[in-house]
Length: 341
Ligand SMILES: Nc1ncnc2c1ncn2[C@@H]1O[C@H](COP(=O)(O)OP(=O)(O)OP(=O)(O)O)[C@@H](O)[C@H]1O
Image (cartoon, rainbow, N blue to C red; front, top):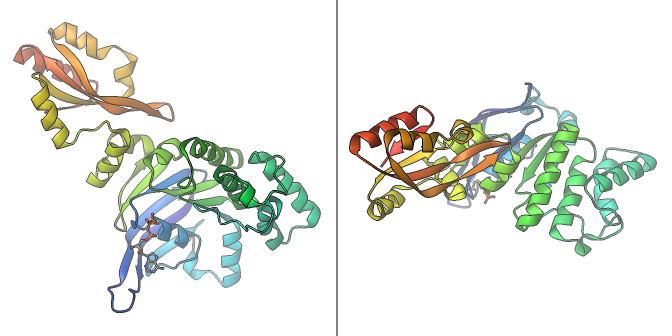
């Protein structure tokens, strides 16, 4: 894989308002984004996601550390080189940022005009983009005549108009309803696969990451607390902040309080099993239960998929003789990660 974007020990401090302490928006952030991947950045409000995105686009400079695109440190670019770089980066915004007095056509044509395309080339390209984003018949509509989803389609057409190789999306679906969110996720993925665009997707919604991204970093208070493949982090979040985000999304992982409640409600031995493919491919649970004369009930949990791979957790109450339950758990540990509680 080829690296497209690299942040090394990036810290960003904003001066505080009069008399207030400076704001440390990012602290020692290092990450590497590969060509052609969709990279998710997730974290709560104020975690520093937008600041990070604005720095990749050269709109903010780091206080310390370096940001490199294709191996070139942005700090060393001349203004004309920075302008050229920014032309190879498209931006998609939560509030669409459309020019409300102008038509869909004009909005999509803006970056093409700025890049000096001829009128004929602009006409052809805008028609192609309107087709790609599914806005047939809307070329001469004004933004106020469009739904939120249609406005975001215009935003995406504008972002990819000059065929940028990188697109940065800042909460692109956060103003949209669930059905429209799905459509926009599909459109962003189509832009990634059809045109090989590297995407950095900032969101506070784990669902968007689970459906769209290949890898992710989780930000908390300006620091990266975890980075990994989406499937890996959803299956086994390591940092408490990640576990909180994943747990509240999947509603599959149990907090200590959940466990306490379940312990009171069920007499059997409680176990939680991290789901993986091998557990679903063969009837491991029922076979072990038969073999060791153990009964069980599934008391909570769930299984979802990302990119075809299962993730999730199942919690069971086991009933049987002590040594049989122990043998069941030992047998299950050959196939999956198990915790008892
Ligand atoms: N121009 C600025 N001047 C001063 N402080 C700023 C500026 N931009 C961001 N900050 C501060 O930096 C921190 C990170 O902000 P940022 O907008 O990057 O977070 P975020 O994760 O994108 O949050 P949200 O999802 O709410 O947009 C916040 O504490 C914010 O107040």
